[in-house]
Image (cartoon, rainbow over all chains, first blue to last red; front, side, top):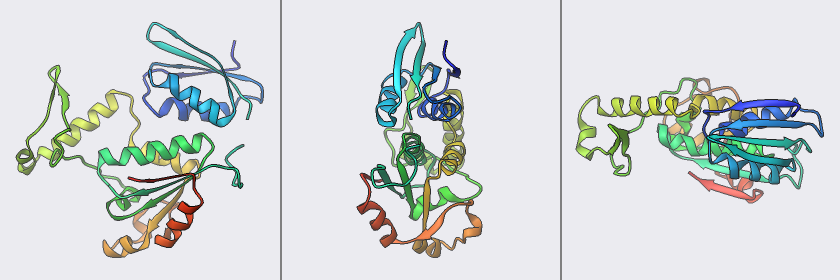
Amino acid sequence: MADQLLDAKGLNCPLPILRAKKALKDVPMGGTLQILATDPGAVKDFEAFCRTTGNELMESKQHEKVFSFLIKRMS
Amino acid sequence: MANEAGSNTKKLSMIVTKGSLDWAYPPFILATTAAAMGLEVSMFFTFYGLTLLKKKLDLGVSPLGNPAMAMPMFGMHIGMPNIASAIPGVDAAATVMMKNLIKKKGVASIEELRDMAVEADVEMIACQMTMDLFEYSMDDMIEGPVLGGAATYIEKASNSNINLFI
């Protein structure tokens, strides 16, 4: 289980990233944030976001139309 | 956080020249996203882009001169001939249609993105020359923007990793 859950379903670019950035601030260093999204562009966007910010994308998966990302806060 | 100013913080600068609803999106989407990714962001608002700093936004969209603007309607995409834009109410209707689509598709409003940009400490510079030309005062604008000119932008741009003209 992730430390925090962010439901970004139905939101379009760039809102899932912006909401995730905000939510990460409340996650302790080393803690995890799970994000649920329906924006298919979020798959590549969360990879780029994590590479650039130094956070770790631990998991990226899809169940039907919902994408799920697990980010470990490292910065 | 990587947001603090420092020599190894990446920087993005943008010149924002357009003030219609559709053209307002790219600069604010990129500014908020770059700030969220830890970049230091400067936006230089000039000419019609300056209106994006007004307290009350009243942005519109026009099919005039935009043959690529085809709206999804009745299960297909329908464009409008240029001459339709001359009919009173057509641009207003296109704007309403666009705003409805924006809401329906979970796309942020410009007001929302602008608030997030201010919150994320995106630096906003209002072009002094345009302020003078179009007779705006800083009282017409939201809190936050500072006045500047070409030299201010060039200095920003020369220290930035990404420079965009939108």
